[in-house]
Length: 266
Image 1: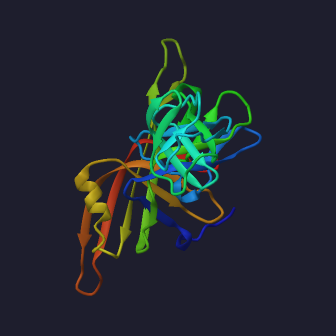
Image 2: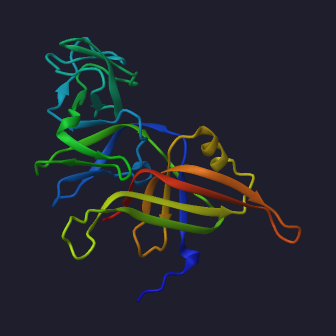
């Protein structure tokens, strides 16, 4: 039996949705699952448009190229696709397909004729499965690819003054016993989770703001450095501040699962 010290628990909560463009991924060579390389950008906004870009052949910027226009004959790009100006280290989404040979992008300083342009077309969503809690892209076919991801992520912040937490996970169990059976037969149906946490910093409005907004957030609970953390889509259910004359003010927040949860690394 391995005892886990309670002091090693870390609680994190998601913050304000933040844009990212052309984030690199790391490939698992065995499973061909692609995960956003930057660990701080792996929790993806639940409702934002997430684009998965597949690397194609490089192109060369032609005569009509300026800081905001790229001319490549027969480029095949559409709005929302990704280009990387490898000559000037510019990563941009295509904002407008002007015609079959020209596209408009956000300004790239120094962009000009002869620059090398890496082209990443946006994959149809039907080609892969996206896990927004882990920032992973899974394909049904095991083929080596170079993948970039654009969209909005949720930065995760540690609840530095949290000192008490509890989590409960359960499955609803339904009776499926048929006539003539001598023992009950049951089957697991819906899964859910709930929990609470307490922190001393009652001036932090993160939780009460999320409660008032009534929108799902992500809560991450890491019981120990030796155990993979779990992330939950959660709705805050209540927020309470208590105080005693001989103690300190203490905020307690309770939450219930909104949707799926994920044990990282599982």
